[in-house]
Length: 275
Image (cartoon, rainbow, N blue to C red; front, side):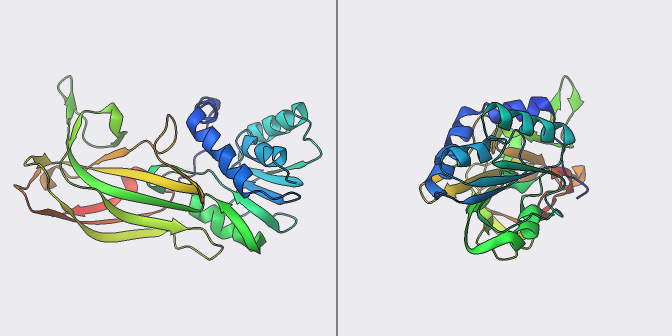
């Protein structure tokens, strides 16, 4: 996949030590696992999620990891924790790789806000070939909402509104309500990675509108739903791309929009029409 990200050690560490994220994933894994289960993890990083599964009673874990560097780290960490005989590391692309047997639990935390940047859907579509009829998935579902905002457009006299930002990094005022525009449910069926939605958001404040905010949540298990934490699912702010299209002014009423992109793409590849 063209936009697939090969994460750096810095990003892996930030992900790993997001305590809220990691603790919720461990709880969800231990809630879903059954004694003797075979686990498949796509995008292993350090392999910690599969090791949680082994701690909770899994028999064996297959971990697919794209980076040769991290494949080596997974093997070293597995050995340090006494799991070297219970983990098979497959160094390859989860969107095209095979595994040797069918699995009972599928774990894939290739999760970004809006399902941008990482191939969560594409990896699942490839690897569902190795699911049993009752295979469980973590996450169980992912959903995203959109709202619209007025955001700061320059810094130190330089216009910056040509990109996307973590919403907390840039001053903005939310102008509309949130509307659900995307939901994926992981039950073993094929999922279309094309996200397209026509919607309408109610205007709550009378201000210029120059950007959209994407937020995401996921159900990791029947009892655990997660949203933004230190590393996971930080809301994303996308400026409208073409200067002649904004700012849009609404004094009450609604903003109509169409959003379209392929799951796993860069935020700059999102097509967003607003009127």
